[in-house]
Each structure stands twice: as structure tokens, then as C-alpha cells.
Amino acid sequence: MLRIEGVSVCYGRIQAVREVSLSLQEGELVALLGPNGAGKTTLLKAIAGLLKPSSGEIWWRDWQLSLLPAHQVARLGISLVPEGRQLFSSMTVQDNLLLGDYVHHVGRFKNLLGPKQWLIRRPEDQQRLAEVYSLFPRLQERREQRAGSLSGGEQQMLAIARALMSSPQVLLLDEPSTGLAPMLVREILGLLEHLRERGLTIFLVEQDAHAALRIADRGYVMETGRIVDEGSRKELLASPRMRRAYLGGL
Ligand SMILES: Nc1ncnc2c1ncn2[C@@H]1O[C@H](COP(=O)(O)OP(=O)(O)O)[C@@H](O)[C@H]1O
Ligand SMILES: [Mg+2]
Image 1 (cartoon, helix red, strand yellow):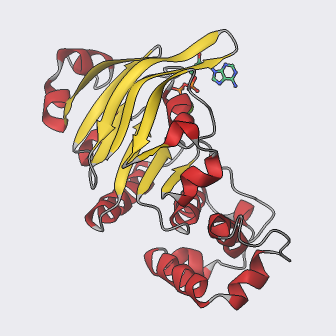
Image 2: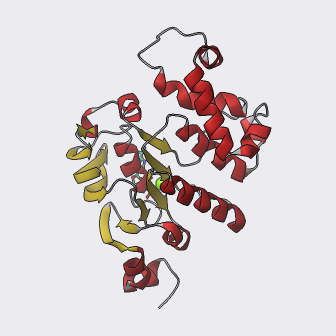
Image 3: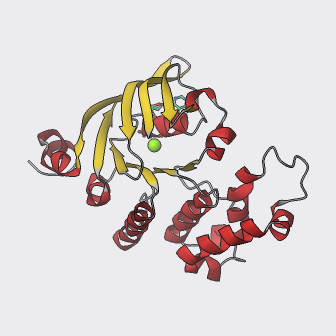
């Protein structure tokens, strides 16, 4: 289980996340909703170890993540699909995936030749790549293509595929539907449901509440750094605040 207890995160004097507490049970798909600037990305980065909380604690099972550097958080099985995808656009699809797998090697080999050489040496990496390609056949077809030449939907798939290369147990996704046509959004959501069925714990940040609540078990709503609403998918769909602010109802 992932537990966030009274976490605050600051950028200098700006407090972007204010004493947030929330938790995810293993195997759950939980949505984090809220408008631009609410602090959602900041919270995900704190979970991933990319930002240190100024107070509070973040626990995954028996580890206090908030004390660990990002690469150790990743090795414990927490993987972030960042906002805006952050691919290496001039590198091939396959090299982007191999870089996602880097986390398995950091600390074991310091001066390696490059990701390609490890792959040739290590059969389990070949297997992981094959598993990821079986989930994303389109990426396999395009493996020698530059990442920057993929469509928006394919790039988002690649960003998710790269995160899966580290065999994570928790997947943190930062607005994966941004900029995608409705059909592609459905495809991404379908993929996330499939990953949950395979046992992954998923924390999905979305501005598109309709989309997120189609698949989430539960959700939290964040505004100006604080959690202002929470509940099961049903409760959130019925919540007057949600309907007013995010679901376009009365
Ligand atoms: N690198 C940064 N330096 C200073 N302020 C930041 C930085 N990143 C985000 N912020 C501020 O923190 C708040 C939360 O931002 P963010 O976590 O990106 O929100 P969201 O992802 O919900 O849109 C905003 O007020 C934003 O302007
Ligand atoms: Mg954001």
C-alpha cells in the first residue's frame, strides 16, 4: 500500500502541495483530479522522489520513499509516466524503451557502453522487451523509427511502455490523455484497465474527470494544493461539487 501522510511540497516560498494525505491499496486504480496549478504534478514528483517534501511522509509498504533518491524509488517498483511524455525524440522507439530499463542497471555497472550492449548481454532484458512489445505491437512495428516521428497517441503509448520496462508495481501517470483524440483516450484508458487486471497499482492524474472516472475505482480532487473531495467513482460522479466544477452538470 502507498500512503501519503501530511505531505507539503514547496518551490522556494511557494507551497504547491499543502498537507496532503491519501492512500492507495495494492491493485487499485485511483484518480487524482483537479484544475491546472492544483499541485497534481508536484505531488506525483514527490512520490517518485524527484522532489523532497518539506514535511510529511510517503510510504510504500515498509519503505519511506520520501527519504530515498529517485533512482532508488524507481528500483522499489514505482514508475512515473511524466507530463508531456519526455521522450528522447531523436532516438528510436527501442532505444527509448531500453533507457526505461536503465533503472535495473544503475549501481550495478557504472561505466557501461550503452543500453544496447546490456540488452545483448542480459536475457531477462530481452524477455522484458518482448513482454512490453506484446502489449504494444504497434511500437514493435515501429521500433527502429525515431520517437519524434510517432503520432501523439503512439508517443503516449511509448511513454507508458518505457515506464513498464522497469517492471513496476505502481504506475504514476501524469495526464496521459492530454492532446489526444477521444478514440485514443479510450485506447489509453483500456490499456490502464488491462494493466490493473494484471495487478498493477495505478495513480492516474487527470484534468479530464469524465475520462478518469470511467475507469477509476476511487478518486481524490485537488485544488490549490489541498485535497477538497474524495470518494468512490460513484460518490464522485454524484458529488455536487464535482458535477458543478468538473463534470459540466448542475
Ligand atoms: N518549478 C516550479 N517552480 C515554481 N513554482 C512551480 C514550479 N512547478 C510548479 N509550480 C507551481 O506550483 C503549483 C502547482 O503546480 P503543478 O504541480 O504543476 O500543478 P498541476 O500539475 O496540478 O497543474 C502552481 O502554482 C505552479 O505554478
Ligand atoms: Mg500537471
